[in-house]
Image 1: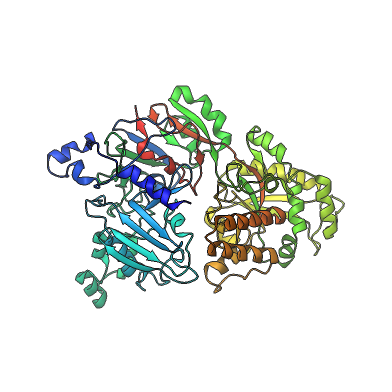
Image 2: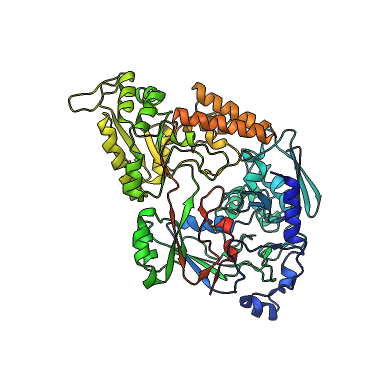
Length: 624
């Protein structure tokens, strides 16, 4: 990452803007009646000018964008898609300023942010460094609001930053050691929010509200003040319409509801090159529907833009309905390391299964016994790539060997490995575990995709040929995860690495045991997350090496050294098969209303990095 170049780019976007700002028609009445300032008073002095690229063109104001979601909590997708962050990834996966005007990084540990003068929250109140001070002093370091202290993402080897408010628009964060994760965390799809709307939340803080303090002292409140404050403070969940926002659209609907309506943020900081304050679209409506019915509803024309809950196996159905219901079905690339991966649980409670799953020969045998070309042909019409869970070809870290090692279909080699372990076949051809039980693997799923069941059925056919029987067990997502975390699950299914497009300067934390959400070693990850207080300390040499490599990556500021570390970690994963990838690059159907413009014909549909649609700036989408 070349920071000086990024700073020059930031100036090119903001400093050269001189066009006359244009008022969105939907707001003109409120401006004329004095209920809202004019756009020139609402926008920052130096707004972010969004450049048009890859066939984008200037748009027109108006319209209601309708999308479908499977549950109320998915209203947070407005924050994901809106993708307003202090810094963001551009399409080249470079980190650039967004809410801030510029940033400066020194020695990889001193970060100085300059805000946009005149920037305001959605309720018109100033967005200043007071919002950063309030979060740091009165939220992150308040023992009642944050009993565990500041978030782990703000700690470097347990050390919190020194936070300095230099003036109303300049704030600095300093650590004694480099913090290579800081900017990527700020640019995340589920970001590290290091600021809060102080003017709003102070009303619920006992330090600033005498009424709140008195109720707390007398015990007159129904709930403790901290619980009330935390419930109001839902910047990512986006379920509190009263909470001011900096996103392009503001949620106006409080749950529970079956329809969420978001309207344009009158104070949004981005404009187009012609001076039109973004977003172009006035309103976004998210309608709740059963996730299993969403493909049918989309095919019936009930969504203007939809990818969530659509699978590749819906593509043919969607194409058939395009003309009658006036939409296009695009095929974007997916950005995860693997579209479908098996996760042997190395922390499973059963001692027999634990020992077997930790034997690399067993994991390799299971991988070799998967006929990936058959799965690609039957399920994905040959449009996917047979691959381990690793970096995609578009990543500078990709190597063919990482994709193919122990991932070619070889039934004889798989059987030989199983024989070496001592797993003997019975009369029915199924092998036995060392304690005499039949070698029957129950693969658990979140029960959200029929596609997973189809792939597992094909895997089960070829596993049976080498003496392994496969059963599928679907459950609700929460139950699915709890069983894995507790060690009850032997093996599960999920997608692969979130970021299959990584560069050497992006964190390799997914490759080391760093999170309980890593289904192959949840207790190792929990141990890391909780500084050894709970979970299990990694006791597998290669996993220990991954942890060591990750720590080394964090300490170096050399891109060449970071690249070396990445390659060693990727090599270990290919050799050890901690996750068993099946196919990658499965096309993602993206349905777009024929009258909706500036949605790229080709793109990556990925949560991290990318924020699904966010990296393509939905505020520039517009209706004809």
